[in-house]
Amino acid sequence: MRNDRRQIQVTHFSDPGCPFAYSAMPFITALQWRYGGQLSWRHVMIGLTEEASQYEARGYTPLRMSKSNKAFRRYGMPFGRQPKPRMAATARACRAVVATRLIAPEQEWTVFRALQFTQFTTPLPLDADAALRNALLRVPDVDTETIMGILDNPEVTAAYEADRAESRTAAGGPTEFQGKSANTDGAVRYTAPSLIFERNGIRLETGGFQPLEVYDVAVANIDPTLERRAAPESAAELLEAFPHGLTTREIATCMHQGYGEIDDAAAEDLMLDLAATGHATAEPLGDSTLWTPWPQPARPPVDDRSDRFARSGILN
Image 1: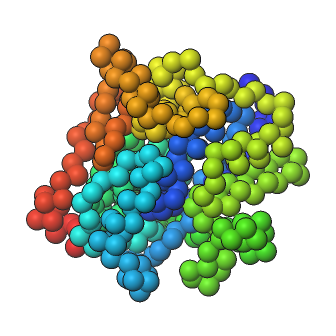
Image 2: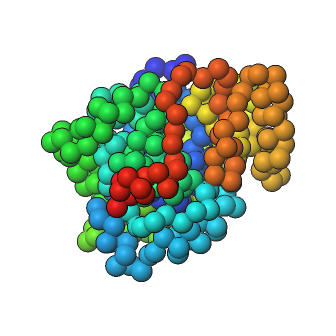
């Protein structure tokens, strides 16, 4: 593996509440598989909304959001079907990512993914403590209560506000030029996911939702001498590389070769073979599956039963 001076720095602007960012996860996972440690990732939280009323003022309702999510199913990531009881802002979930970055940076990406799963496969509003705990409990070894306890600490607030400010610097750049930026609160910002690839003065900006090939072209233009890992010979290689687990579409995208269609059914067959021999476990996730290596580290059960949270008043 090359030393740090040869790494390409990737700045990833995103938000756990964005369906475009969620739908792009198979592309980002494939990018991570192909280049591994040759890419150094930095995640910047956009903070799409501070208050649920911002969505309400734009005419969004839980029913409208649930119906619009149907359009994203073609990208293959799991979605739930139950509408949420109310609209929710994304700021608190972004703070949870930032808090994790400060106390356990090695868990930042896994927590971000877990928050996406909670947002798009459960009826929990993303700004409720129940939703944040639901996500954090999905991640083995993460200190759930410590993260919950520091969400409003000055250090977390300062880091989160720095992320928000950096996310709102897209004016005049390639992202705005391509029509991939947004201005929802007075500043031109990056949309999720936006990736910026940089090394030795070369900077390539891929704003907003883009196909995997765009990211691959950016990497190739910065350094065509990098080691580009081919599709894995077996699905077991993927689980070894991504012990936090992968969805069926992520596996299918990493296994894909050539120019044909992504084959979710073939990927599921491969994973079923692993599950049948005790090398993987299938966790139902929305309308699809999260596949993880077996055995997994012990973790508390994840409870996403909306009736329980509604009775406790947590969803209010």
